[in-house]
Length: 168
Figure 1 (cartoon, rainbow, N blue to C red):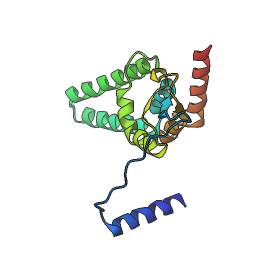
Figure 2 (figure 1 turned 180 degrees about the vertical axis):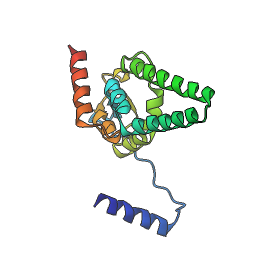
Figure 3 (figure 1 turned 90 degrees about the vertical axis):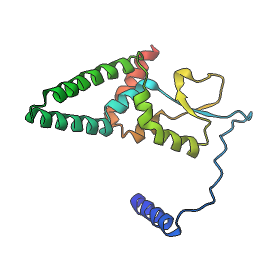
Figure 4 (figure 1 turned 135 degrees about the vertical axis):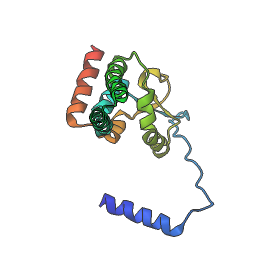
């Protein structure tokens, strides 16, 4: 049903063609006192979900395939680069999970969903919960980002356990 609705929307957009009139951007959501609302996410949950996602699996599969191909072609230079990429990626993931490295690569991948959430929920922005103003109104978007990353129930359980251990 969802794919049918998407197909209908795509067909109607293609039939009507591009429009010169654009809808005004949605105004950021306001709390009861008029302050804008920011979306917040739990960093460690998102790092875990990203590195356990089908998206990351596909990236690794592509790299493994390329490595196999260049090894078969005796391209030792490229093979070493790919092996280095694997080791560096694993190290980066651990550093990010421990909060010792920025998550810019993950945020770049999440940008389409962050833009969508910002517009759909009328947020002023989306930030890590640790950097949000605790006095400002906020809405938790971690589960929505994990949905977009197609986090499994096992990943969600691991994230919840990790979060619980960090709270103790």
